Length: 465
Image (tube, rainbow, N blue to C red; front, top):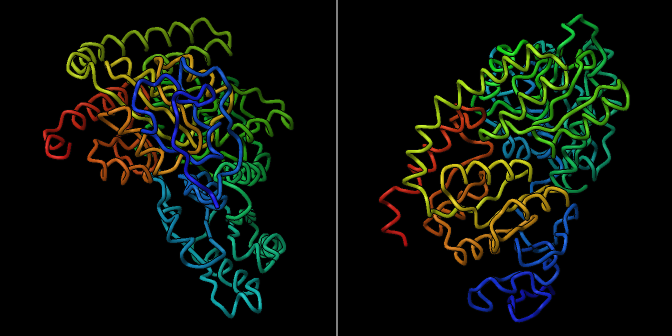
């Protein structure tokens, strides 16, 4: 039986020693003690990259969900879920990912396995369903997702995909992602392997100074903002993987000179595969916040060793910062003293959020992620103010207690963190799948400041405290 453990701040080994609050004000499961730390109070490296603890009700999703959210934005491909209808319903339109053309990805298809299929197998049903859908929609490729029940009954999805590819003449890729095989992060790896099966199938000539953008999912059109920046610098963007993605561009991705990785948690493995096979270097960037956005542009110019490109990047940065700083100063004057809690999927995103919040006067008091690495958490620890709680793979009970303990004014997270904030009576900022306003780039920073201000300063909160 798993028992909850009240934190004793007088215990030297407790990660909450020296917080200054009441002893026992936060609650952790015993087995999760080493996955929580405090900036300035504990030098121990936080435990991460481990399976979620059974019974902790982790905020992480399953392997299938991780693969689905990465592959979903490829808009001219067919996405068919081989499993019960619930798996398809759960991940339907899970990302707002906008497309500048085809929108086949917005449709959700499932083989809707029933009890009879579980007993006698669902391969025949899968083949017939996929063939019918491919003939009806004429996709450029098809992704067939395995779910938990398929992993249990043992349907040979790989064989069905080979038969379908021979029958239809398009790439049909098995996404072997039974949910029970691990966590969302394992699903990212499965998605990268599936994408890599497309890479190298096309050889179209492209400009020498070309990049692929990996890990931006164009949730609210921010990818189009980034494309405009790179166009002004003279950089050709070859493939966007996977936001507003196209099968042909991904198939030609091996001809780019550089992979620029925005979401390292989901796309580092694909960058590694392309480096090992095609010798394409990669760099990790963030497009959120003034500092990181500017560095992302400068780093690409440095890679190509192009003085003219660097001059254009500097001019672009100067113009954008001159335009936005007066507005940000207005927000900073009014938001100084407010406190924020952050819990997002990738730790690199959390790092950018801490910097952006500091720019508008907001102190970060809690930082957590689902898929952070030891290096990410060490950087977060150095970046944050003393006393900031740092947590890996948290759950609703922990997050609720941390937010109350640190008296946060606003919670920044994803779809599963929204109910936590609203139940507590706290302002919430969606920085994940469901948002409708672009938060990347310089324009995105203004949108972010505007949303934080409108949420934190709303008069409604005086009725919920």
